[in-house]
Image 1: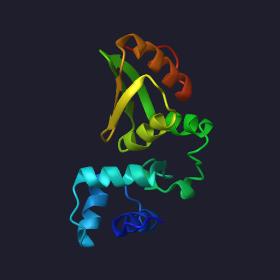
Image 2 (image 1 turned 135 degrees about the horizontal axis):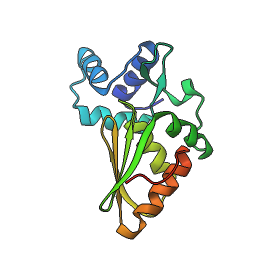
Image 3 (image 1 turned 90 degrees about the vertical axis):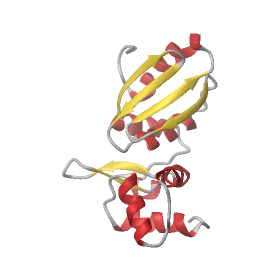
Image 4 (image 1 turned 180 degrees about the vertical axis):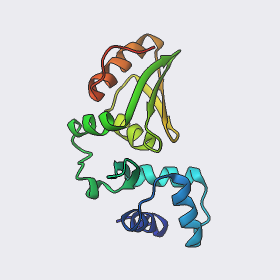
Length: 158
């Protein structure tokens, strides 16, 4: 458990409720007296390694690693996570863009970051999009291919 009281509260909220979006989590934290921005909530989600899991009705909610049974130290597990949330992978200049289901970009970004691809200079995730800055434009197709293999997708999409 985190030493940060806000992050501790986030974990409690995620376990108690079916929280679907960062905005919903931000509103609940504000109700509890935590004046946080969406960017802060996003960083907390990444630090706490929260991920999205499917509900029986087709919606998705945040869950802790312990709840999902996903061991983030095992790279092989990311194929499952990314395969469930990634919709497409494409190149644009020196960027690789990964589109995900709504609310899952943070989990996808954390999964990609954990792979330690040397070609990726940095990453940023929104709600349903991950942007990966590739340090050398000649490596974009290789990064796309690696991600598609990890995700289980077919041919390169540009």
